[in-house]
Length: 157
Image (cartoon, rainbow, N blue to C red; front, side):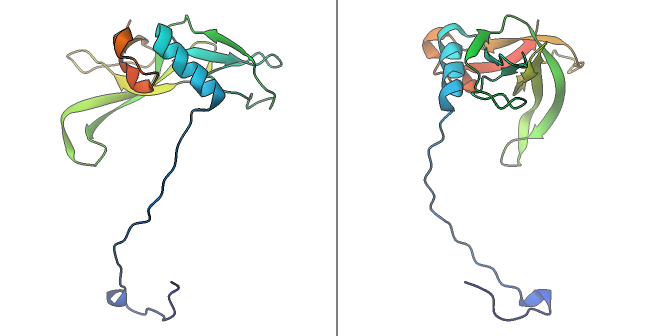
């Protein structure tokens, strides 16, 4: 409904609360599904490799963002990840104070573009440095579903 009258004072502004019912299904796509299957099956990360520019990307994707060609080649990452960036948050996703601070990091892999944003386990002192080598802490194989939540956190190697 358009607003037809001009508001000259902020006290004249009105609002109402309502909701818009939306239904959607998000799929990870072909390359994303391969990434998820590899994580579930073997607990390893799958990277896509471009045959033209030779760049690798994690998580795996269908098309090279540099060359715009389809990437058919994949490989599992054997390299350790490293902390590219991190932050510690004291609030949960709803904005309420959390019981314990949580450290979130962007984990990258040497020679690979992209990365994974996930929880980071820090030592008792709470200190972390950029470039620290990390490994994932995974759920038991029987409990994995192929989601990023199969990774409980990353911890220093």
